[in-house]
Length: 391
Image (cartoon, rainbow, N blue to C red; front, side, top):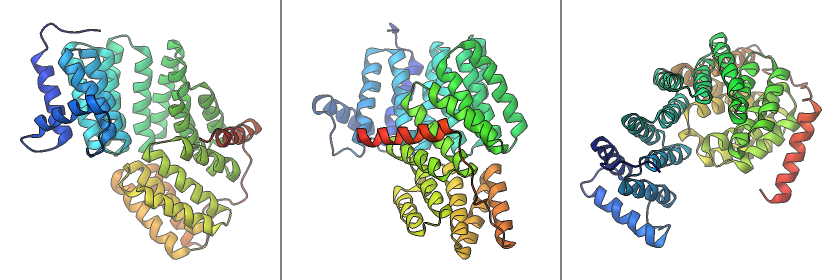
């Protein structure tokens, strides 16, 4: 444990600002927070608090602060930020990550600084705040390279590639991902290597190279050691399988994501993916059922990137079912939203679908194609195993 005999004044100010911010405005906020956390220490999760699940990490923040344990404090700040991001409190998460970064910089911990900067970049990218996301990823890359942290340099390069990919600049994205792959192979870290293959899956999908995308995705899925990372990769593979036209394999992937993910972004993506598969196979009742579940889950308050995807999915689903007025309305919303937020990939797809709709052409090839046997059979086996385990 790394501590400081004199807790830095800057660290004290940062921690106190976090405490006040987590409870919101009010002059008694800090005193009330201390009371709540101390009560939690004695009685554990207190249902009267507005979000009991946040009290455990808040305890860790306060405990670390009181012990002057800087490493634990930085880790706890990122933990609270991650919890806020998973609940789609993106603005609060970004502030927590920024505090973690400033604290890491103040005490000279480059690894903690890079992790906090990357977390900020990810949260901002999901909000389509491209310039700020780029700035935080560049900061993470600069710090990781100056400190000789090759694994984190690879992940920071991949973050920069994701920003470019989401904005539709595929050549620039590929350049960043290839740089990241070189760094990841040199570092020898399995999860980092898996994450780059995961990102390359998305790039190949956008380039129309669907078999190559599935090869990258399957390699990533079988290389990741983290169950959470595997679930996120599965969501990406579901999108590739939908584009390929293997509806059954896509359904298996979406169902696995829905069963295993607690993140709003991936849950609503899976729900609308299942709805879209129903539409493509002519199951109108199934489509309506899954979209109602997605609406109840609250997709409209989710991250901007998920909202853009779902607006497009809905329009394409209505189009596949022949509900032309609904399709046009949702695709027009998708075009407007994607254009406003700079989601070039979704913009191109929604515009092409609108053009096909108005020319009375199908937006997708209904014939479909089969995924490689190892992917199709592997996903089916995973879904059966999940069902047997009660997941």
